[in-house]
Image (cartoon, rainbow, N blue to C red; front, side, top):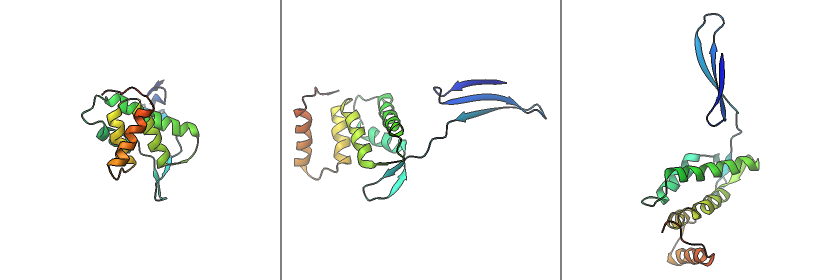
Length: 144
C-alpha cells in the first residue's frame, strides 16, 4: 500500500494489507548488521554496547556543559567508525582511545575524568602527566 524511509533512511516503513482478510498493518525493514564483538583486556569477548559508552560519557561529563546530543554524537561516531572498518572484532582499548580523542575536542574536564577511569590512574603523578601531555599539545581548553 505505502512505503517510506524512516529512522534517517536506515529503515523502510511499509503499510500493508492482508489479501485474505483485509487487515492493515505496518512493518519495518532494517538492514541486519553483523554483531560487533569487543575484545576486553582479559581476553573475553562481549557484544558492542552503545549504552555502556554513553553511561561512561554521562558520568564523565556530569555537571559540565556537555549536551546529551554531543555525547550521543560521540557514541554515533564510534559505532560508525567501527562498522566502517569492517572488522567483526575490536579491542576495548581501541574503542576507549577513540572515545577519548573525540571527548577531548568537546570538554577538557570530561576528558580527564573519562581518562582517569579508563586508564585507571593509580596516583597523582599519572594524573599530572596526562594533564601535562594535554597542555603540551597546545590545545585551547574546551568548556573550561
